[in-house]
Length: 298
Image (cartoon, rainbow, N blue to C red; front, side, top):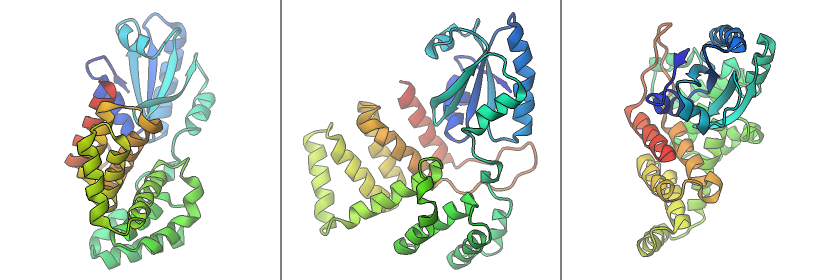
């Protein structure tokens, strides 16, 4: 549990929620129900083993944050995912109801990075990695981490058809599993590029449209997909940031959702660390997460 103020809200809530759901507990020292709910939330956070992060905001001391979320009574809890509030509840719920609320939104425990992934270090050749991932998926078809990494590895290898075959069993889950949605956006970008016979001419066309009108967001988005299909991740992110800085909600958040998809794809599997330690984060991914947070909050 972390105490959050306006000073650390961006880092502890917005940025943190890009990788782990964050539950905000709006409370006050004088509030009786808050004193009942607080220990329950802390107990559930410990029991869920990192599936979500709990933060507390004193609504008396941080009235600006309370107003931003429209808090009218306490305790009120808000769940943040990808920098956005997705659900909440008011009042001191019992432990079972708190878990029921969280289970609607949190990934299951097995969705956390698989324990066996570090074994890939024994042979890091692309062929060995692919074979290990194929074995993991065959052994446990519901292992979302293994399937994500298998499809990702196939796409990076240029084996687009094999990737689509491996992805087919979970394509219906794209609405519920964010990283599967990220893979789908990547494959759509590859198909988009494949639909242009004259690749050089198409890219020149995007550039000409953008030069003529910097607010031609469709041309910018098409160019970002073009870059995404070529695995030019940071170039694609920069193009999407240009859209977001001019219109945060363009085309139903399409630029932001694609930006998050690229971050998912860029991020390597988390290495195993000792209990209580935080796995290191890719500095490039961390930088672009902060840039997104800065634009969204501006």
